[in-house]
Image (tube, rainbow, N blue to C red; front, side, top):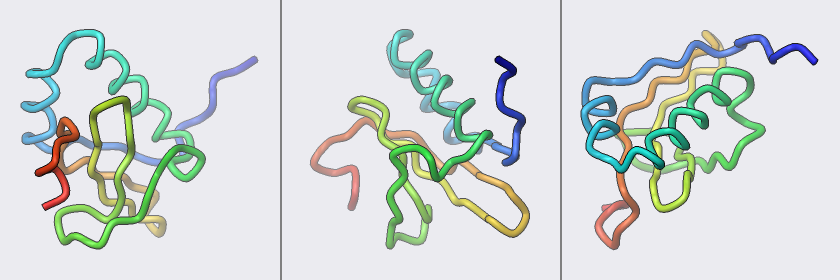
Length: 91
């Protein structure tokens, strides 16, 4: 079986990279795996549409949330930030 071709170009902001480095290593690996899957087809994952201005969508990875903007016209997904789910996450 061949791996899926990348349909979406996924980029991480500096803020997302910085926050990813602060998480435990086991969750870093899970988050990185989810980011790889985003490039194949982000809408086949647990993506929910958001109403905030920072990101248009969010992806759940365990207790962490990946906030991203998806542009279907240019086939690009930009990860704005990655946060641990708390009571303050969606404010």
